[in-house]
Image (tube, rainbow, N blue to C red; front, side, top):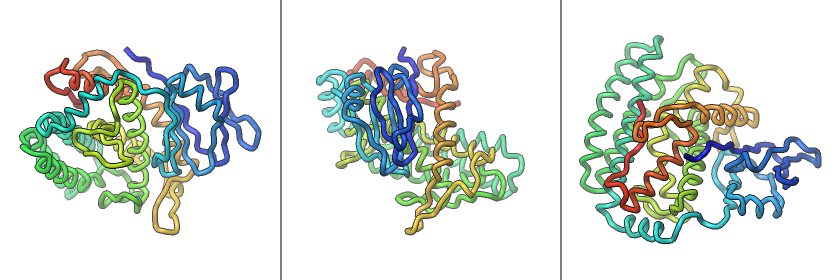
Length: 344
């Protein structure tokens, strides 16, 4: 079983990463901030416009299999530094053939979307149990969404085309996000609808940042098993889009990213002052807020659960790697169907 390693997150503008022996050294204005043993890392991820790394470090990380991801302050991926692609060409060739087969792609996509809807439904159900201060109207709306999403799971598994599946997912997302605001405690934050590129309110800004973290982890997991993260079965090919990483993260969005956001907001770990509004109306997290999110994200990845398919205790951080390996087995033909991660 793969070991759970850490990701080094760097958020301070002006930081510079270099290799110091077998450690990664992070400096700011020529003063060292931290040193981290390279053997303890699976990835390095930066957030900012003015963060650099030495060519020596990048070459060493590529050889050691430690991916470096450079992101903008919102978490959007700018570029990756990676080494030679793992796995074998036969797996990727089979992946491409499978992606070009509409029926084979649909069989995998249906399970992924069904898992996404079911896991999002579990988040709403948990909110109904935990939130004792919901108004009657909020509780009724959330309960209605839970019932509608149960039907959505059945419709996703019965979808006969990619377009039909897309419609099922869209309806389920509308139900879910229509009730998501009722899971927020207190009066500091409101959520009316999902907005992206750019996020227009603090909750959407936090969700987008969490999704960027999740997408990066899924991309790394897929590439580690030798799959091409750009060629998806549900998200079709588009230049610059990691289609398969977006496929894989669907089943993790609600239980990992959305619950992270709810935890940070409902426990008052973030306040309205932790968000800033740019000139164009885009809302972003402040530097301190990003560090809070990253620290909580990294700690949450260490939590243990029993994987429902493998029946083994694993950390949350290993889940994308496990699902990527199961997906690779499905592509090879070792599994008759892809077993998605269903939350309980």
